[in-house]
Amino acid sequence: MALNAFITGATGFVGSTLARELLAAGWNVTALARAGASRRDLEGFNVRWREGDLTQAESLIEAMPADIDCVFHVAADTNVWAPNNERQTRVNVEGTRNIIQAAMRRGAARFIHTSSFIVWGFQGTPLRETSQRQENADWINYVRTKHTAEELVRAAVRERDFNAVIVNPAHILGPGDRHNWSRMILLVDQKKLPGIPPGGGAFADVREIAKAQINAFHSGRKGENYLLGGEDHSFLEVVSIAGELLGRKVPKRTSPAWLLRLAGQAHQIKSRLTRREPDITPESVAMITRHIECDSSKAQRELGYRFTPVRHLLKDTVDWLRKEGLLRDREAGK
Image (tube, rainbow, N blue to C red):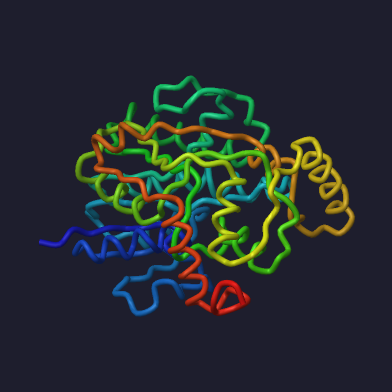
């Protein structure tokens, strides 16, 4: 008998990949989407779409079928521009509270919450699930709201015996990426990459993340976190590989962190006048100038989580971008 899933964030990169993996595994998939949201990455797939909004609690009750086997909460606002913080808080915090309550009311058997490895803050040693959380990144609203969302999940587990598991992906690469690391690849292809930040960390395959989310339903322990990392690389190494794959020249050195911080401040001041979201903000600079190592051994043991070599992962991403007609040339090197 097929299992039944309800997904938030299915119109996005991670959520759409999860939906396809669930369908391939024989699940029935119902997906939440805001009115007017693009569903192009799941066109032709047998997904039952329901309109709703995380910030509108009643819409979630109406959209979610009763007695669902698992709610996969993937949706999040990844904003790093302060003027959008209020909206982000509504989505990431109030939205998580609303979807937890909806899952309880509709009798969902399990809840898989997708968070981020950044919720532990900026660590100076390899990150593990047992690492002490640092508050040094809490001035970034994204970090603060994602941590608060996790606290809501843990409170529900503790106080209401809510059957939930939390997964924490690192930097995510893979086919289907339109707005994440693909922006870097596109800038390299267009020869417009202004510089390379001095940070780095673990790079995860979005397809393996999706499989881990599904395995978290089957074998994840209630109330536990699972870090989903990958090969550890500097951003310089990642950009260099992308340049090779695209046949483009890229910088051979990173830009100084202090220079990027100045640029972030300057763009922030300019954005106050233009009221347009800048390409770089103090928040984004803080995240791209850090190198966060990540230990995924717990997920590897308990969820069967696997790494994809970064070169292979970048090639798959580049091939997908080319297939979608998003690269400047059809073949690398032209």
